[in-house]
Image (spheres, rainbow, N blue to C red):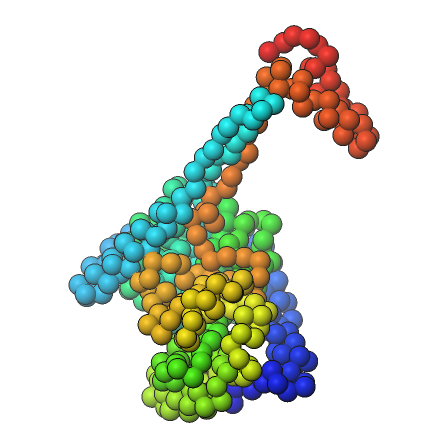
Length: 434
Ligand SMILES: NC(=O)c1ccc[n+]([C@@H]2O[C@H](COP(=O)([O-])OP(=O)(O)OC[C@H]3O[C@@H](n4cnc5c(N)ncnc54)[C@H](O)[C@@H]3O)[C@@H](O)[C@H]2O)c1
Ligand SMILES: N[C@H](CO)Cc1c[nH]c[nH+]1
Ligand SMILES: [Zn+2]
């Protein structure tokens, strides 16, 4: 049974705090194991990738090859049914159209002192896209990672994806081909992240690693940060559904299970002011679990990490939602827009009964790679900006330097950095130059 909390109970603050603090994805075990995997890949490169993939993915990469060939990518694209290709192309076009609007613009201007200031955006040189594939295949994640990288103009886009039992879903390779990703390696987990960060004989290192994955992938990204950039921590999926008595219990149950079926570490939470709705949703989840193909995973997620939180009224909910900072927030209640406007911390918000989160997973056009584990308090979903960086620009002439230089020299003096001061005063006192 999922945990049940009620804001009217006196122990609510303590139980809610414990609930927020409970870790789903960073056990000490995972941390230590991931450190050992990264060290192994740094020390032994491809040999480590081969050994670790044999252990964790039951695949012989020495025989199969670490790199997916062009012929394999072409064959995969040719093999998929026309309707599936059309659906992928439809999704890609919608993701592209939305992400094109995120392209930032350069700016320069000259202020009253005559100083020219500005910034210029350039793309990262090489990015590694992590596409999960341990227990499910995610062609949609290929598009969500690759399309913004393409929109940003990244010259080298590399994809890694695990090949459990030697298999990568043809749809995943087809999506890569459609998205113009031609450098693909069949490695997953922490070892793939380590290879992208430090490089091996087969996989040249990248500058930034993006994309979602399970607890091992998320932990590996944390550990290689600094050596390379990372987008965010996008670990096991989460949804929080805010609903009132007017909501449809079956629809909510379906949406809760849509996250729970991702991973035993996924989390689905219902927040409602209606005891009756809560009871009907819990019953509907139980009944849907009976026929769900991934019931084993979804049941464990719902039992171990699910929650039903009863609030006095929905007015109380935004503050609780902000503390959870869920990856996805669905609002199925009267005044959904008004409630949505009050939320500050959520990866993505899905407003109204006809906006299931699954639409955002596939074809909405917004990105489905989103911050998890409460990191929406300080980070955002994947966007074109994750593949770019901003260089600031300054230009002064003698007049401008004269106007702002005195204060700079004063600040250098109080910081006791004499050479700094001199590098300004040597110019302003020179009375000439260019
Ligand atoms: N936040 C997001 O935006 C988002 C989007 C899509 C998917 N997801 C999440 O991505 C995850 C996908 O997980 P997955 O497992 O299917 O695929 P995955 O590719 O993330 O992980 C599979 C890899 O994990 C490694 N691994 C598995 N067990 C291990 C162990 N005991 N020790 C060391 N390494 C081990 C293996 O190397 C394997 O290749 C799910 O948690 C899902 O919720 C998140
Ligand atoms: N819900 C996941 C993000 O948490 C993304 C996804 C891909 N495919 C299906 N769902
Ligand atoms: Zn999903």
